[in-house]
Length: 289
Image (cartoon, rainbow, N blue to C red):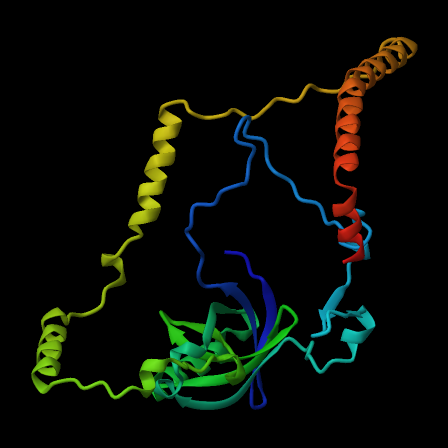
């Protein structure tokens, strides 16, 4: 694994330097959008909707759209004054029982590894936290976003789990919650009996992604059946032996391409003119609307 962030756990007057790693990874089969006929990759351009021009990344800013449709453009200077800490600290705010924190708040999990000089205080806090049976509630800034998070211990390592803010949790607002739905005692007893029958200790290794496995088999079958489009080998550009001859050939090729496209353009323009003659009223009406 490769660390994606370096900082320190701030616990009272104790500072524990740590490195942060993603604790999870998606195992989805990834695809590219390609041209069906030749397998060529589909590329996208950043195009301005106002002038239709392609925009270089250096000219792209962040914009906030108002309800009126107007756009507020923010610059780097606008973000510099915001109260987002850059101290790279994981500040311990409090300790609380894990069962008091609803799992719906959890967003993403990370592992924390101590730097060499921080190993002893790391282990000290880890052991103390583990024996307390509680989790540490902390605040941390990652990727230009400040988050609440918890610190807990898993397999001898601190796990930092970032959390959503309370106003980011949607309230369930469904009609059936206001309905008076009666459940008979015998129905409830039977449902409880079913739960008891299916009760067992949870072992994540017993489950697997059947869809992903089946999809991988389809891909492997395609490969075995040679239904694969090989990557196109581009000819290596070589310097022209005779520059003038190369230029002359390029001019002639360009002329042939232009002449071949001229009849099609003329035919398209003629057809467009006929359509314009047939429907002048419709165009006028559209313009006035």
